[in-house]
Image (cartoon, rainbow, N blue to C red; front, side, top):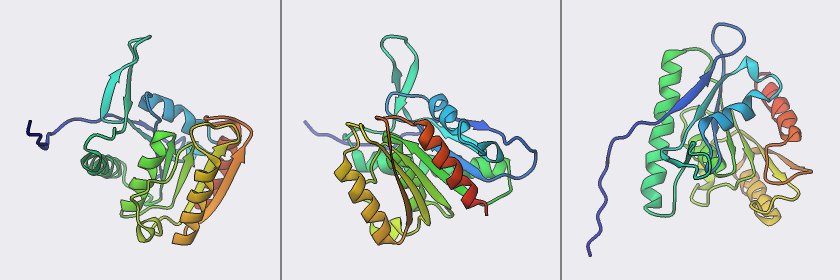
Length: 216
């Protein structure tokens, strides 16, 4: 058997929540977890205090499938098959979304990337390769191993969150991620909250403070 890969064009989906006030607004760009849709992450970001000052963009993973019980369309970001190619495809996809949003609604250059679970890796990959980024909000997921220290160093600040009872994001991984980011020069705010693998109220409150600080 001979295996080959070939590039193919496809369409992605993203949701945009306008800010409360008209005019230019900074961008809060989010990435959902495995087996979720863009709506799930949009709801999480909407719940952040002060998020109505931002233009919220929730990007859905290209790998769509059906939730067996409800027949709802959900998505994931990638699998281990052709991993490097999927990373490149996703990076190009996210960059194209951000460019399209900034072209349609020109204004503030400020951009924050926010991810939950599997979406955390996408948030860091997008931030590390973005032309301009102000920070990352990461909840319940780890920093991808392939991102080099110089690339991580392009991320000015990060809020890194872990639930104390999270079985998917281990304490040792959390500590390693905080150390990696700090050694790269990123200003890190670590948060361990009372909860599991979730985007909790404590996360929403910390994210609100993080967003406010990026605007000062």
